[in-house]
Length: 599
Image (cartoon, rainbow, N blue to C red; front, side, top):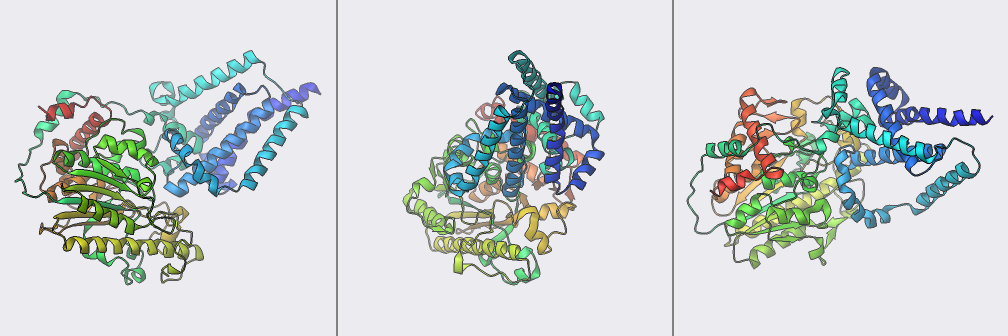
């Protein structure tokens, strides 16, 4: 009987990772049939995932000698992992990734906010059940134990195996993965997770945490790029214009959905002033990555998919529009109506050369509209900075009022009722989102009206950081017919899910040229052009790159003649490699660019 109990616990121990794996994939793939189909079609993915789960489970012997308690804790970890992954997908449209471990500090900062949203009774119930199970397993259930020496051996072997598999590119594991068709889909992490499963998909991204140095990186290669860029000598203006950039949260033309909404003309000010579309590296979230591209001219396309540049890579002084304009005599100001610690903005803005950062902390009397500070407060803050500063100002303002999700009734009786015959969920989402959209457009009109009557020469740039996340699995986009399905997208579909309206306006007579579709990384060169400010060698290079390839994202690119492509043409490969070298030098390398340009 004792042997039966002993062997029974170990049989369960080794079967549990299969149960966990099937459970995860059932949950992620909406059913047992889809999970089993994936398992049968991918036996090597199954085996690799099993080994990983077993190793993670075995590491838990560091805390206890009881095999059943290890199994209980293993199940708990993977339930939490799967839940967090699903929630992140809902909020940011990206699965949980290795570099999310860098965000623990941010999560801790969010705990007071999370606490308010918790169902404390449910949490207490779950903890009580968990504690009860632990008590039963210790006091009432006979099972196998591992003594200390064996526990150390098992934990050590498991950790070594996980590390060895995590660095698969550096050993024979990588060769096995290639022969068994186990590959990471870096350009789309949702597809990567769907193809490889949650656990293996996570593992395959581990090598991307560290950015490899390009083979031909060195001072000579950077110097060669810089010397090729022809500096344009610009005539100096007597009075430099203020530059106001407003990145409006999830701003998009809702009229694109269908003809019925187009007739409503919800955003007349933007439509009257629009000069093209800004192509975002993101969808539904990841605002900080759009900021990164606009301010630095660098590209998320050259960084791991799903990474957050602010949190992971801006760790030292980084050239940006703020730094360039500060050297030109501007007072550079960042405004964001949320907390300074979010996405590590306080440190990032300092590294980028901003002179001042105004956040929700500095706006204690600001009025909310709905959940967040109103867009009207952004307008007031911009006007105040223009009026109070004698020198020209560069303002980069990020709004929050229309932040998702949009299931709530934040505007009450003031909510706009969008016409159409949609599901109740889609109707509520569209109503809430459109109400915030109208407010954002109105505030742009108010700012332009003020500046038209001002003696301050000013440039206003306005765009949305990304399309809104209108329900999980693109629900509102599907219900309204904007998308046919959630997977089989053409290149045109991929582009239209990244384009937001772009406004570039000035009050001193500078011609507003039509820009067409333009990646966020390339917007800075157009701003410097309109302000008649000489570009640095980096921005000269970016200007040249964008002339050849105005849209450059991971999923879709657009050539100068309007052709949509998934991969760039051969004649652009050299330029892309030079872009990669410059970006590596700025973020991770020896800053050769800075020393060369100072010579």
